[in-house]
Amino acid sequence: MEVTITGRHCTITDELREQISERLTDSISKLKDRVIRVEVEFTAHPAKGDPEDDIRCEITLRGKGPVIRASAQAADKRTAMDRAEDKLMTQLRRAADRRKHNRGLREARSLATVPLDLGLLKKPEEEISNEPETKTVAGIEVTGDGPLVVREKVFDTQPLTLEQALDEMELVGHDFFLYVDEQTLQPSVVYRRKAYNYGVIHLNVDGSVTKANS
Image 1: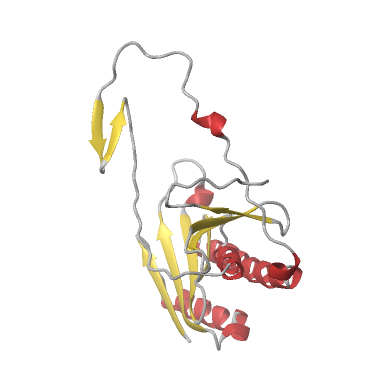
Image 2: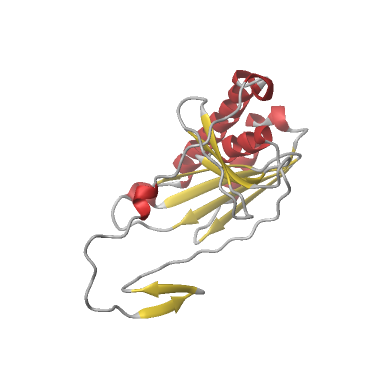
């Protein structure tokens, strides 16, 4: 298992590099057959306010199966590393617990979808009399003052089952996960509700309307 440790805008000493490598090799020893590479990245961005945000540590596990990632921030590298490792272990435990808790999910029950709140799309009652300036930013037409920040990412993927999507969501520590459903090939999103309850939203790309149940 390969461990790579890098720093952005900061220096990683040989002593710290060796300690982190030994520590992670020991803490994820149970996953050594699945993990091919461990990536640890420290990023320094001194915060204007809270010094607890000065150093960010991100740990990524790559290998057989979904990518596992956790990150945390602190005033120094060691504390940021401690927090990121704690989050990583918590995510691994949650994923394992979820699989135990939801065993037989397909046979027992299906996840419900949640209807969108169309009230949020209503037009404001008062219209602005002065027509604002319209401009194009990153291919999007923007009316009025900005700023508009667009960050575009493209990922390679393959269709997943609902169970696989839930596992990947837990392992990256997110509250939602976008995927393509293996059976229907619909763009879909699973998201966390309470405890081990989840929701799923499917999109029909042909324009047909499907009722959503909460």
